[in-house]
Amino acid sequence: MDNNRLLSINIEIDGRIFPLTIKQKDEERYRLAAKMVNETVSRFRKTFGNQESQNILAMTAFQIALSNTELQNRTDSSLFIDELKNLNDDISDFLVDKKKK
Image (cartoon, rainbow, N blue to C red; front, side):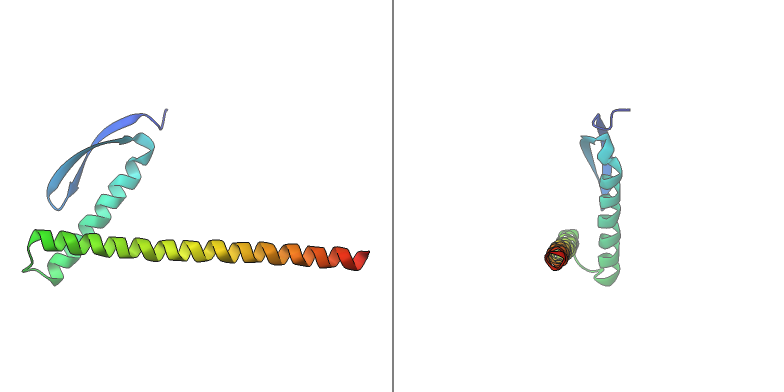
């Protein structure tokens, strides 16, 4: 099966349907993202029930963007730590080789 085949799906966010054309291989990610948005909207509606939909959606977008930046920072830190480990290994190997000579 060709995972790059285009697929038409409907994503529902806060009761509104959005038709999308995506790669078939990405369908699960899109549906998961929509689920996360709807769960966040629901949580904000319970907490701030008297707010307009536009405000709830704005707070949802902000919450998800904030989570994304936190994830990016963690990923960036992980890459930095991995690079430091690689450098440490290289230095250790160099010192071991130098001792042998």
